[in-house]
Length: 70
Image 1 (cartoon, rainbow, N blue to C red):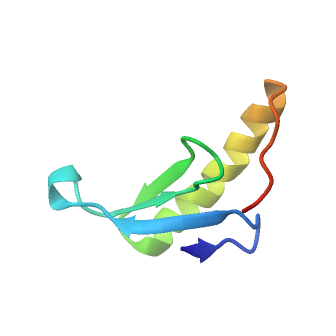
Image 2: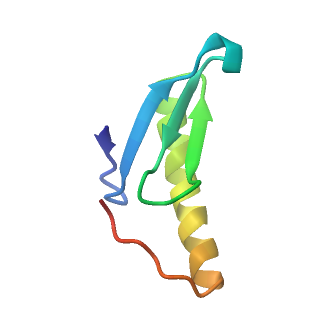
């Protein structure tokens, strides 16, 4: 698990099986459904960081409670 200094949300980065298309998956356990992917762990992490911002913006727009960083 990697700590994301920019947002303080923990991001889990793991390889995807070739049957699933290969590459890497980065998920944010504190934010249900928030994830990113990429050909490299770094690309998946960058995609997840963008997704965190979008997830938080959508939650705010919908008036939902925003989970704190893990």
